[in-house]
Image (cartoon, rainbow, N blue to C red; front, side, top):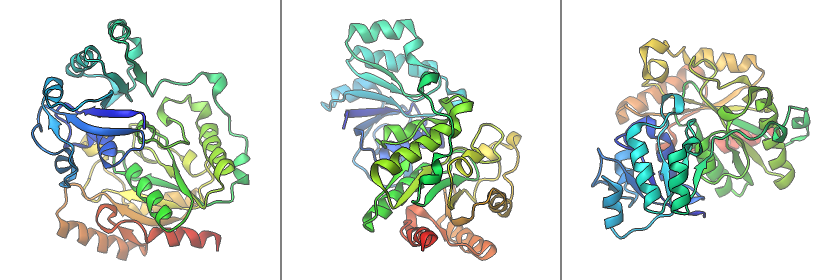
Amino acid sequence: MDGKAILLTQGKLDSHDAKTAHGLLRGTDRYQVVGVIDNSHYGRDAGEVMDGKFRDIPVYKTLQDFSSSGVTADYLVIGIATKGGYIPDTMREVIKEALERGLSVVNGLHEFLGDDPELNLLADKHQVKLIDIRKPRLKFQLKFWDGSIAEVKSPIIPVMGTDCAVGKRTTARMLVQAARELGLKSDMIFTGQTGWLQGFKYGFIFDSTYNDFVAGELENAIVTYYRDASPDIIFVEGQASLRNPTGPGGAEFLVSGGADGVVLQHAPGRKYFGDEEKLGLIPPLATEIELIRMYGVETLAITLNTMGLTETEADRFQHEIAQQHGLPVFQPLKDGVHQIIPLIQKLNA
């Protein structure tokens, strides 16, 4: 591990804007998470705020409160994803305070801390680091797609979604854990900042990569993992969705990444893309399955994000979707995902 971390969510801990924090609260091999700074949910356990499960990770109102607790940390991690990737002014003040208190700051947003002269001076003064994990690599370091994906014989399974922020990474991580528990060698190719923060070794950050190189970087991550480890199953963290109008979530995962099958994550309680009416209705699930098939890949299973649904509603949707589409349907946080692994193994049978 790199050290102890406290997460900054500033009133967003109970929303899907805090998906970075949620991922780290569910598990990370890179940091030991020792607390959350959130001025709306302080005094509670972070896990209970997130999903009702106690995780013994306290929420503090301020960094001063955290420091007074006697617990120490090495890093402050920005735990939210903002629209446009900008750092809110209220967070900037907390970041300055963190630097003054001797904490390095880890930032997965599109606005880079390293571009701010004041923050650089503070970091230098207090001998700590500003870590911008979304900062693009130099072009000469990037790969074009070259067809080497054809040498990969392990099943390649992207976890796609019908919208942004529906839990694709969480389900992919659970699938890796399920495969390992069944004695299989497996890992997830990360494609976002939270996957890096969780400590996954192979991958790249999709939305900070020059478009010409996205296909090649995806291929390279998969092929490098295959050459290094000869895995039994390779899972790939999908991004956005094929039809969300606000950002790419593309066919690269299906075509350039040599997908052998898809696990499709869906939020049946969500009507509009991004929960915003102006972004348009999420198309029927059947059309998403058919669109994936048109790219030459079959959907193996559907996994449900049940946020906003009662347990009864979630169970009803699970039954109805299974009946309508003739596919196995799971609620990962309730059912687990172990039953999906044999479906993948049949691909090479």
